[in-house]
Length: 491
Image (tube, rainbow, N blue to C red; front, side, top):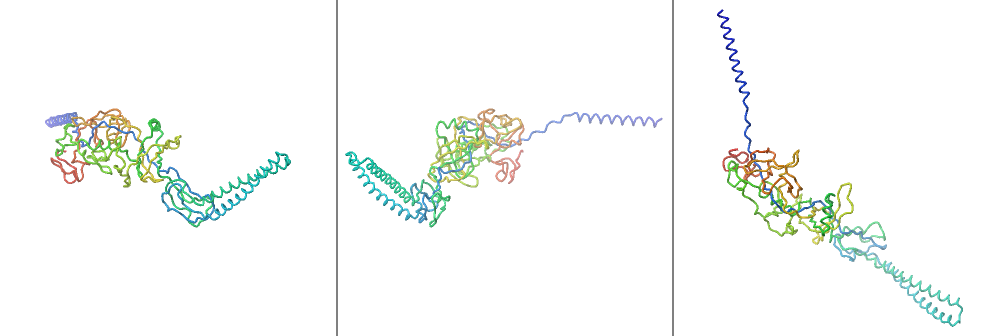
C-alpha cells in the first residue's frame, strides 16, 4: 500500500513538471521577436537642378569627298611626262600628264593645209558664181550654166566648213595631249606611270582626285527623329559638330552640363566622422571641385563619376550655345585619339527612309580648311536641334529601372532614403531629363542604390570615402580603417 502511494506521488510530480515545462515553452514561443536594427548604407548623392539642355542627336558618320573624279585620257598615245607627285593637292586646270603630241601636231598642220587649199577654191568658186549671176541677169548665158557655177560655189563653201571643223578637232586633240586636273582636290595613287600607252576611253584611270575643301560627312539618324530635323531645319542650316577618327561623343554643351551636375555631389564636411554626419541636413554640404579647370580627356568628379571638365570653371572660348569651340576643346576618343571638334552645316536630307535599318541618311558640309577631315575616315557627329530651357536634370546613374518603371531614391532631411517614381523624358550626355516625379533641389542617390530599401537610413559619402575604400579611403576622423579603408569606427 505504501509503495502504491509513493508511485502515485511520483506520477503526479512528473505530470506537474511536464505541464510547467510545456507552459514555459508555449510562453516563449508566443513572444514576438523584434526586427533587427537596419544597417546604415553609405551612398553618394547629387541635387536635381535646372539646366539649359541642348537637344543633340549623336551618330557615327563617314567622311565623303564633295566630288571624286577619275582622270582618263581623251587621246591615244604614250605618256611622256607626269607633272605632279602622288598625294599632291592640285588646282583645277593644272597639267598632270603629257601624252606624246607629235602625231596630233602633224594632224593639226594637215588640217590647216587642207583648210587653206579649200579656202582658195571657195574664193574662186564664189567669184565665178557672182560673175555668172551678172551674165545670167543679162541673159548672156543659159540658166543651166548659171546653176552649175552656183552649185560649185555652194559645194566649196560646205567643204570649207568641214575643213574648219577638222581643224578644230585636230586642235582639240592636240590640246588634250596635256591632261589637266578637272577639279581642285587631292590626288591619289598614280595608276599609270610614264612610258605607258594609254587609250581614249580606257577602263584604267590615270589618277583619282577627291575634292576635300569643302567636304561632306554623311551619317544616319533614326527615322523617329526626322520630324524634329525637318521642323528645326526649316529655319536654316542646322549646326553639326564632328570629331574625326572616333566614336560619337557627347556634344560640348551636354558635356558641360554633365560635369556641372555631377562634379559637386553632397558629401560630409571635411574632418567629420560618419557617425557625426548621420542626421545632418543638406545645408551642411560643402561643394568641392567646382573651381578646377577642365582637362582634355574628361575629369573624374568627387564620387568617381566621369565628367568632361571643360565645362566646370575652366577656361576657353565658348560657342553661342555654351559649347567649347574647336580650337579650345580637344576631345579624348576611344583608343587615345585626341581631336578638336569641327563645325559645319546640315546640307542634305535623304528623300526616303531606309526600310532595312529604319534610318535616314543626312549629310553635313564642312569647309575643312585645316584638312583634318579625310575621305573615308570615320567621324563622330552631333546634330544640334534646339535648346530646352530650365530642364530638370539629374545624373543618369541615379535612375533605377524596376518592374513598375523608373524610380530614384531621394534622401530627405533625416537622411532616410525614400523611393520615388519618376518619368524620364530623355537622356543626354550622362544626364536624365525628368518630366515628372522630382523637384529642384531634391537629393538623389547616384551610387549605392543596390544597398537600399525604401525608408532605410543612409550615410552620405564624404570626400575621404571615395570609391568605398581602397588606398585613399583608409583613415577617418573617429576610428577605423587601415590602408584598405574598409571599416570605420561606429559602423
